[in-house]
Image (cartoon, rainbow, N blue to C red):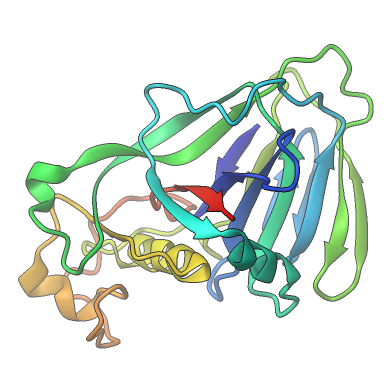
Length: 249
């Protein structure tokens, strides 16, 4: 199962057999989607993927996985789940056997703006995540739940030859990111703000003098076009670094 877009992952504090994936609703993004042989849109809401056996072990991160990690209180997670103001996509899934990256990007991460010494602190952070399951029966695989507009959904999923399910959310067009990486930074900022964690991302080729004013993470952000409109990461998703959260009592 592959996740695209700005997602956070955490073990469900109420059920050790489940993992939770959450992405912020972003105005200039498409609605989320779930896709196997066919695809279906997901509006903001609370959902559950069923039909896969959970792993018998706790949340297992691949040893090669590099992600932004932080902690949030359980009360904050409950508040995010209970919000029905079209602010997030909230999905419960069976605990996977393994969590790994299938795409990475060279980023630097810090707790203050600007990120200190991004050129020397860069790492290959996961920008797309794979959750792995083992089963011989996917006949009951489906996504159910309630969108924030109170519409209930029940989406059966039929796997193709690749035996994968894609869940994602991305920009409303085939984005050619600007040279300041402002779209990726804005998407990550929306994710960090949703959970109220103090995490900032930066890029090794980022020019603070030229791009600082237009950086959406900057406390003194000044809306406007960056001086270098092209030259960032191309693609139909934002390729922001992903979060893995520990939920505390």
